[in-house]
Image (cartoon, rainbow, N blue to C red; front, side):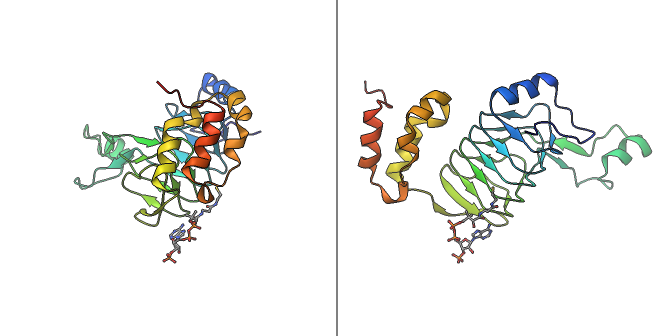
Length: 210
Ligand SMILES: CC(C)(COP(=O)(O)OP(=O)(O)OC[C@H]1O[C@@H](n2cnc3c(N)ncnc32)[C@H](O)[C@@H]1OP(=O)(O)O)[C@@H](O)C(=O)NCCC(=O)NCCS
Protein backbone atom coordinates (compact mmCIF):
# COMPACT_ATOMS: atom_id res chain seq x y z
CA UNK A 1 0.00 0.00 0.00
CA UNK A 2 1.47 3.38 -1.02
CA UNK A 3 0.96 5.95 1.65
CA UNK A 4 3.79 8.38 1.16
CA UNK A 5 4.40 10.83 -1.62
CA UNK A 6 7.68 10.84 -3.53
CA UNK A 7 7.39 14.47 -4.53
CA UNK A 8 10.42 16.43 -3.28
CA UNK A 9 8.44 19.17 -1.61
CA UNK A 10 6.20 16.69 0.14
CA UNK A 11 6.29 17.83 3.73
CA UNK A 12 4.07 15.39 5.54
CA UNK A 13 5.64 14.38 8.88
CA UNK A 14 6.21 10.87 10.19
CA UNK A 15 3.51 11.27 12.84
CA UNK A 16 0.94 12.06 10.16
CA UNK A 17 1.96 9.02 8.10
CA UNK A 18 1.59 6.70 11.09
CA UNK A 19 -1.84 8.18 11.74
CA UNK A 20 -2.82 7.58 8.09
CA UNK A 21 -1.91 3.92 8.29
CA UNK A 22 -3.84 3.37 11.50
CA UNK A 23 -6.91 5.11 10.08
CA UNK A 24 -6.89 3.03 6.88
CA UNK A 25 -6.31 6.10 4.72
CA UNK A 26 -4.74 5.62 1.28
CA UNK A 27 -3.01 8.42 -0.58
CA UNK A 28 -1.54 7.72 -3.98
CA UNK A 29 2.20 7.96 -4.42
CA UNK A 30 3.38 11.29 -5.78
CA UNK A 31 0.60 13.29 -4.18
CA UNK A 32 1.51 16.71 -2.79
CA UNK A 33 -0.16 16.95 0.59
CA UNK A 34 0.04 20.07 2.74
CA UNK A 35 1.18 19.03 6.26
CA UNK A 36 -1.94 20.53 7.86
CA UNK A 37 -4.38 18.53 5.74
CA UNK A 38 -6.79 16.60 7.97
CA UNK A 39 -8.21 13.37 6.54
CA UNK A 40 -10.86 11.08 8.04
CA UNK A 41 -10.71 7.29 8.27
CA UNK A 42 -10.98 5.03 5.21
CA UNK A 43 -10.68 7.88 2.70
CA UNK A 44 -8.80 7.02 -0.50
CA UNK A 45 -7.12 9.26 -3.05
CA UNK A 46 -6.57 6.95 -5.98
CA UNK A 47 -4.03 8.73 -8.17
CA UNK A 48 -1.55 11.54 -7.85
CA UNK A 49 -3.14 14.74 -6.60
CA UNK A 50 -2.21 18.18 -5.25
CA UNK A 51 -3.86 18.98 -1.97
CA UNK A 52 -3.33 22.31 -0.21
CA UNK A 53 -4.48 22.90 3.36
CA UNK A 54 -8.02 21.59 3.78
CA UNK A 55 -10.08 19.06 5.69
CA UNK A 56 -11.35 15.89 4.07
CA UNK A 57 -13.90 13.71 5.84
CA UNK A 58 -14.07 9.95 6.34
CA UNK A 59 -14.98 7.34 3.70
CA UNK A 60 -14.40 9.68 0.75
CA UNK A 61 -13.73 8.12 -2.67
CA UNK A 62 -11.43 10.46 -4.52
CA UNK A 63 -10.34 9.78 -8.08
CA UNK A 64 -7.06 10.84 -9.62
CA UNK A 65 -5.60 14.28 -10.22
CA UNK A 66 -7.63 16.12 -7.61
CA UNK A 67 -6.40 19.67 -7.11
CA UNK A 68 -7.42 21.47 -3.93
CA UNK A 69 -6.28 25.10 -3.81
CA UNK A 70 -6.37 27.25 -0.71
CA UNK A 71 -4.58 30.30 -2.10
CA UNK A 72 -4.76 32.78 -4.95
CA UNK A 73 -2.25 35.01 -6.69
CA UNK A 74 -3.21 38.67 -6.26
CA UNK A 75 -3.92 39.95 -9.74
CA UNK A 76 -4.01 43.62 -8.79
CA UNK A 77 -0.20 44.01 -8.93
CA UNK A 78 1.88 44.28 -12.10
CA UNK A 79 3.76 41.05 -11.33
CA UNK A 80 1.86 37.97 -10.16
CA UNK A 81 4.83 35.61 -9.80
CA UNK A 82 5.69 35.29 -6.12
CA UNK A 83 9.30 34.11 -6.49
CA UNK A 84 10.17 37.05 -8.75
CA UNK A 85 8.38 39.46 -6.39
CA UNK A 86 10.48 38.27 -3.43
CA UNK A 87 13.86 37.51 -4.97
CA UNK A 88 14.15 39.58 -8.16
CA UNK A 89 12.16 42.65 -7.15
CA UNK A 90 13.10 42.14 -3.47
CA UNK A 91 9.66 43.48 -2.57
CA UNK A 92 8.00 43.03 0.83
CA UNK A 93 4.63 42.87 -0.85
CA UNK A 94 3.47 39.30 -1.33
CA UNK A 95 1.60 38.44 -4.48
CA UNK A 96 0.27 35.08 -3.28
CA UNK A 97 -2.04 34.81 -0.29
CA UNK A 98 -3.89 32.15 1.59
CA UNK A 99 -7.59 32.52 1.26
CA UNK A 100 -9.56 33.60 4.34
CA UNK A 101 -11.98 30.71 4.13
CA UNK A 102 -10.90 27.12 3.97
CA UNK A 103 -11.71 24.16 1.76
CA UNK A 104 -13.80 21.60 3.60
CA UNK A 105 -14.72 18.31 2.00
CA UNK A 106 -17.37 16.43 3.98
CA UNK A 107 -17.72 12.72 4.80
CA UNK A 108 -18.59 9.95 2.33
CA UNK A 109 -18.08 12.27 -0.66
CA UNK A 110 -17.25 10.88 -4.12
CA UNK A 111 -14.99 13.07 -6.25
CA UNK A 112 -14.51 11.93 -9.86
CA UNK A 113 -11.26 12.20 -11.80
CA UNK A 114 -9.55 15.51 -12.57
CA UNK A 115 -11.54 17.81 -10.30
CA UNK A 116 -10.32 21.24 -9.19
CA UNK A 117 -11.60 22.69 -5.92
CA UNK A 118 -10.97 26.41 -5.51
CA UNK A 119 -10.53 28.32 -2.19
CA UNK A 120 -13.42 28.98 0.24
CA UNK A 121 -15.52 26.03 -0.79
CA UNK A 122 -17.42 23.51 1.31
CA UNK A 123 -18.53 20.20 -0.15
CA UNK A 124 -21.33 18.71 1.94
CA UNK A 125 -21.44 15.15 3.32
CA UNK A 126 -22.40 12.53 0.76
CA UNK A 127 -22.04 14.83 -2.27
CA UNK A 128 -20.83 13.65 -5.70
CA UNK A 129 -18.58 15.82 -7.87
CA UNK A 130 -18.49 14.73 -11.52
CA UNK A 131 -15.28 14.08 -13.42
CA UNK A 132 -13.54 17.19 -14.71
CA UNK A 133 -15.56 19.63 -12.58
CA UNK A 134 -14.25 22.93 -11.28
CA UNK A 135 -15.84 23.64 -7.90
CA UNK A 136 -16.03 27.39 -7.31
CA UNK A 137 -18.91 27.52 -4.80
CA UNK A 138 -20.11 25.33 -1.94
CA UNK A 139 -21.99 22.16 -2.86
CA UNK A 140 -24.89 20.97 -0.65
CA UNK A 141 -24.86 17.57 1.10
CA UNK A 142 -26.04 14.56 -0.94
CA UNK A 143 -26.22 16.52 -4.19
CA UNK A 144 -24.59 15.60 -7.52
CA UNK A 145 -22.71 18.52 -9.06
CA UNK A 146 -20.91 18.60 -12.42
CA UNK A 147 -19.24 20.98 -14.83
CA UNK A 148 -17.24 24.18 -14.86
CA UNK A 149 -18.36 25.93 -12.73
CA UNK A 150 -19.84 22.92 -10.93
CA UNK A 151 -23.64 23.10 -10.71
CA UNK A 152 -26.03 20.81 -8.86
CA UNK A 153 -27.89 18.63 -11.40
CA UNK A 154 -29.80 16.46 -8.94
CA UNK A 155 -29.98 15.07 -5.41
CA UNK A 156 -28.82 11.51 -4.75
CA UNK A 157 -31.87 10.51 -2.71
CA UNK A 158 -35.30 11.86 -1.78
CA UNK A 159 -35.33 14.48 1.00
CA UNK A 160 -36.70 12.10 3.68
CA UNK A 161 -33.91 9.57 3.06
CA UNK A 162 -31.26 12.30 3.20
CA UNK A 163 -32.66 13.51 6.54
CA UNK A 164 -32.37 10.01 8.00
CA UNK A 165 -28.77 9.58 6.79
CA UNK A 166 -27.86 12.98 8.23
CA UNK A 167 -29.25 11.82 11.58
CA UNK A 168 -27.38 8.54 11.77
CA UNK A 169 -24.03 9.96 10.51
CA UNK A 170 -22.76 6.43 9.84
CA UNK A 171 -19.24 7.62 8.97
CA UNK A 172 -18.69 8.44 12.65
CA UNK A 173 -19.26 4.85 13.80
CA UNK A 174 -16.26 2.69 14.55
CA UNK A 175 -15.39 0.11 11.93
CA UNK A 176 -16.66 -2.85 13.97
CA UNK A 177 -20.08 -1.20 14.33
CA UNK A 178 -20.18 -0.49 10.60
CA UNK A 179 -19.41 -4.16 9.87
CA UNK A 180 -22.15 -5.33 12.22
CA UNK A 181 -24.67 -3.06 10.50
CA UNK A 182 -23.71 -4.16 6.97
CA UNK A 183 -27.37 -4.70 6.08
CA UNK A 184 -27.81 -0.94 6.01
CA UNK A 185 -25.09 -0.59 3.38
CA UNK A 186 -26.60 -3.23 1.12
CA UNK A 187 -29.96 -1.64 0.39
CA UNK A 188 -30.61 0.36 -2.78
CA UNK A 189 -31.72 3.69 -1.39
CA UNK A 190 -33.24 4.81 -4.67
CA UNK A 191 -35.61 1.85 -4.61
CA UNK A 192 -36.46 1.89 -0.91
CA UNK A 193 -38.90 3.94 1.10
CA UNK A 194 -37.87 5.91 4.20
CA UNK A 195 -39.77 3.23 6.17
CA UNK A 196 -37.58 0.44 4.74
CA UNK A 197 -34.57 2.35 5.96
CA UNK A 198 -36.12 3.14 9.34
CA UNK A 199 -36.92 -0.56 9.92
CA UNK A 200 -33.22 -1.44 9.74
CA UNK A 201 -32.28 1.58 11.80
CA UNK A 202 -34.75 0.52 14.53
CA UNK A 203 -33.46 -3.04 14.44
CA UNK A 204 -29.96 -1.90 15.31
CA UNK A 205 -31.18 0.99 17.52
CA UNK A 206 -29.10 3.48 15.54
CA UNK A 207 -31.09 6.54 16.55
CA UNK A 208 -31.42 7.34 20.24
CA UNK A 209 -35.05 8.11 20.92
CA UNK A 210 -35.41 10.46 23.88
C1 LIG B 1 -21.34 12.83 -12.09
C2 LIG B 1 -21.70 11.43 -12.54
C3 LIG B 1 -21.57 10.50 -11.35
C4 LIG B 1 -23.18 11.55 -12.96
O1 LIG B 1 -23.71 10.30 -13.20
P1 LIG B 1 -25.31 10.12 -13.40
O2 LIG B 1 -26.02 10.39 -12.12
O3 LIG B 1 -25.49 8.76 -13.96
O4 LIG B 1 -25.74 11.30 -14.37
P2 LIG B 1 -26.04 11.24 -15.93
O5 LIG B 1 -25.01 10.41 -16.61
O6 LIG B 1 -27.46 10.85 -16.08
O7 LIG B 1 -25.83 12.74 -16.38
C5 LIG B 1 -26.78 13.74 -16.10
C6 LIG B 1 -26.38 14.98 -16.92
O8 LIG B 1 -25.13 15.51 -16.44
C7 LIG B 1 -24.15 15.50 -17.49
N1 LIG B 1 -22.89 15.08 -16.88
C8 LIG B 1 -22.65 13.91 -16.25
N2 LIG B 1 -21.39 13.89 -15.77
C9 LIG B 1 -20.83 15.05 -16.12
C10 LIG B 1 -19.55 15.60 -15.91
N3 LIG B 1 -18.62 14.94 -15.24
N4 LIG B 1 -19.29 16.85 -16.37
C11 LIG B 1 -20.26 17.55 -17.04
N5 LIG B 1 -21.50 17.06 -17.27
C12 LIG B 1 -21.77 15.83 -16.82
C13 LIG B 1 -24.66 14.50 -18.51
O9 LIG B 1 -24.15 14.80 -19.78
C14 LIG B 1 -26.13 14.70 -18.41
O10 LIG B 1 -26.48 15.88 -19.10
P3 LIG B 1 -27.92 16.01 -19.88
O11 LIG B 1 -28.97 15.89 -18.79
O12 LIG B 1 -27.83 17.34 -20.49
O13 LIG B 1 -27.95 14.86 -20.82
C15 LIG B 1 -20.77 10.88 -13.65
O14 LIG B 1 -21.13 11.39 -14.91
C16 LIG B 1 -19.29 11.16 -13.39
O15 LIG B 1 -18.76 12.24 -13.67
N6 LIG B 1 -18.60 10.16 -12.83
C17 LIG B 1 -17.22 10.24 -12.44
C18 LIG B 1 -16.42 9.07 -13.03
C19 LIG B 1 -15.02 9.05 -12.50
O16 LIG B 1 -14.30 10.03 -12.51
N7 LIG B 1 -14.62 7.92 -11.96
C20 LIG B 1 -13.33 7.80 -11.33
C21 LIG B 1 -13.45 6.87 -10.18
S1 LIG B 1 -13.21 7.67 -8.62
